[in-house]
Amino acid sequence: MSQVQSSSSVIDRREFVSALIAKCPESLIVTGLGSATYDVFAAGDRDKNFYLWGAMGGAAAMGLGLALAQPDKSVLVITGDGEQLMGIGSLATISAQKPANLTIVVLDNGHFGETGMQYSHSSLGTDMSAVAKACGIVNSYQVKDMAGLKQVEQNVNARQGLTFAQILVKADDLPRALPSRDGVFVKNRFRAALGLAPF
Image (cartoon, rainbow, N blue to C red; front, side, top):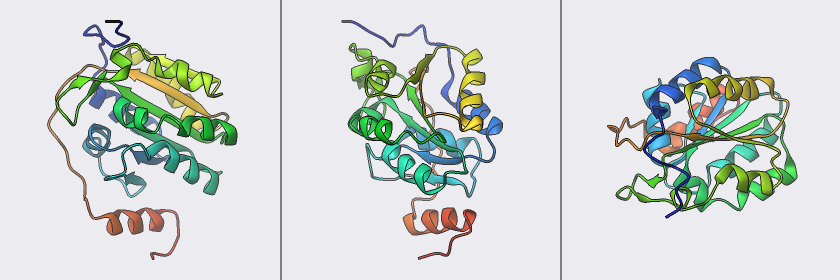
């Protein structure tokens, strides 16, 4: 079995997410279904967080729409390998649009954490940063330790180019930290943070 992800990964996902959000306080954040949402909420609830419940594979595509609609703001998608794999085709569309203010961060533990920690494709030979690069996202790379946080932070805050960062995290089964599942509340709170009326 060819494994990209292994037990040698040293990045604690919650530590990485918390540190990244602290370094990018003005960013609009879209979270992928499952553990990425728990990680972002555990770092501190914000009205600029859009928790995407029940739309597996849709986080990066939603990030694209938001980046195009809000070109003067940094948009940060934080998702997992399983969620991004389900929406892998969106990377080609995102590359075609190339919003300079969009950064996609994939927390890759090499497993489907929500369904029993089965190996995901990234454990079985799929290099997601290489897939993103092949789709045309030139600034695509892997982060293997906390030192890589600085590069991701700079990409988010600079808003000078579309970025895809595959963060190789430990395959931990962490306690769930659950934000509101009220979609109308999350949507309207997020709209209010952008100065938009609820609907």
